[in-house]
Image (cartoon, rainbow, N blue to C red; front, side, top):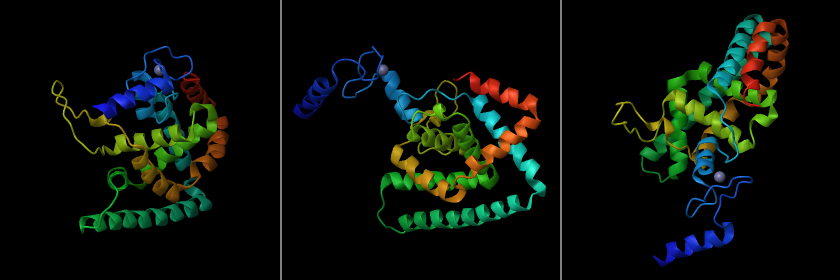
Length: 239
Ligand SMILES: [Zn+2]
């Protein structure tokens, strides 16, 4: 009792009664520096100031990457890049499985690291190389397109990993919504330490490929003006 009273009193002294986000006048959540809304954003978007990125924007970026893959089918250096990525992918699949096997055979491991490894394995298995590549590059593309889209690096990584997790349908707990009968775990939080494990492995495979693709996509978009305008329109909406 005395400890929790102490904590509440300490946060009260440090943070005052209101959310610490500039311009927010909502009541602070007990024991936390933010109000409910900003706390939610921190948990689900990786930063309390991060705006939501609409699915339409994400889809436009994914489509741009897909078109580029199609365009490059006769490009030799593209295939060289892909075979390098393929090799790193296979090595990472083996590495992740090896680490998880060690845990199964009784080697103690950190809970968040293990969760991160399980999530990575689910991405490998459920999404596969091509889908993972497209999603990864599309987020890097958005970041290059508009650097203000993500308020911090954490917010960027968080949304990238979270969108993969959602598409791989990999959740630590599967809870069922009693009313709809559907899994409600799409909204389960992604922990920063768990996310970092996934990020490290993915970035080891794909590196800055998405950023390099950005210029190529831009060139292509010049040729396909209609397509470009559609992407602009979608992205403008969140500026
Ligand atoms: Zn707030």
